[in-house]
Structures are given as C-alpha cells and as structure tokens.
Image 1: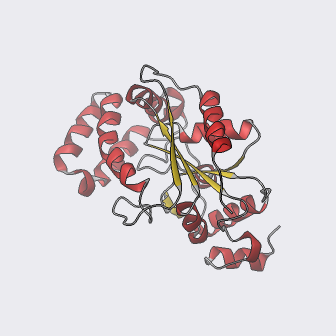
Image 2: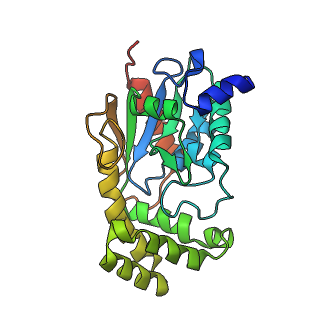
Length: 256
C-alpha cells in the first residue's frame, strides 16, 4: 500500500519507486477503438474473466466525451482521483498485464496522472476494437439516451442541449444547429451519427500518435493489433470480444 507521502508524490507526478507506472511491471495493454466500440464494456468483461483492469472512467465517474456525465455520479476532485488511481495500481500483481482503456489525458474534469498517461502512450500493445457502425450507434443510443440513462441523469434534455452548445467552437455553428434540431425532435440516433463523424477523426489521430491528442505528433511505440467484428453484427457480445482481446494478448511476444 502507498504511504501518504508516496501518494502525495504520485499526485504531483513524481516517481515513487517500483510502482511508478513504468514500462515493465506490470505491463499495460491498451484497449482502444472509436467512440461506441464498447471499450468499457469489454474491460468489465475482461475483469469478469479474471484479468487485471484499471477502470479510469469508473474511478472518474465520467465516460470521457462531452456527454460522459450522463448516468454518472459527481466527479471526484482531481487530487482524490489521482489517489484512487494510485491505490488501484498498487493493488495489481506486477507479473501480470493490466488492461487500460485508450483515454486522453483527462477524463471529464479530472486529469489522468502524468506518469500513468506517459506509460499508456508507451504501452507495448494496443488492441483496437473494430466495430461496425450500426453496432456502435446502437450502443451509444442505449448508453446515452436509453431509458435507464435518462432516469439516472437529472435534467437530461437541458444538459444535453448545453453540452452541444458548448462544442460550438469545435463543431461549427451549422453543425450545432442541426444537432439541436435533431435533439428537439427526439432523433438521438441522428445526434449520435453526427457526433461520431467528429469523434472518429479525433480518435484516428489519437490512437497512433505519440502524445495522444488529435493534434499530436510522432508515432506511438507500441504494437497495434485489431480485433474485428463481422460487419453484419448490430449488437455486441462483450464476453466474446473480451476473449478475442485475450487471444491477441496471448499471441503477442512482449519484449523485456
């Protein structure tokens, strides 16, 4: 377990010895994929199969996108988040891999600890989920606009409208106008499809570059492998996907 002094060092982004989110033990395996690919669901399925999983979004109470607050509890403070992440990391068996979602440097209003984020960008293996558009749309509608999501989110409609308006500089006035029209008409599928056109471009840049942003440069050092789902699939099988991910990891030859 971390001492208070060790945790304080980690929050400030400094080394705490053998557990400094390094490249060696435990090794990080990134689970990636475009928005709506079911990355979080696959992580939970991996956990149910006995794998070690660092759930950055669960610890952050946020799904990471502009709409990631839907169905979530209030977010912790940045310091509390860093402490929670550190404690989760310290509990892992260093001889086994840890699966982590391919996040950006922040999850909602909290920041991924800098040492961890650097290690994620240096991860030796990135498993990218290749999911058909129809399945992604179905998942997004369920997760962000389904009955359960709306029931768990106070003022879902007004907050959705506000979130779309806040993206005006990134999306442009015309796109925001159309999105708001879709939202007012109850066409959440139309909203999801338009947002994917924006997020897909960002993720395609994020997955391969060194720094991990949409404007990043350099090349990611890890090996990128794909887990592809049949183009006719419209609903994902989380357990099957998790098993496919494990097969890719088993086949990968990790260096020293």
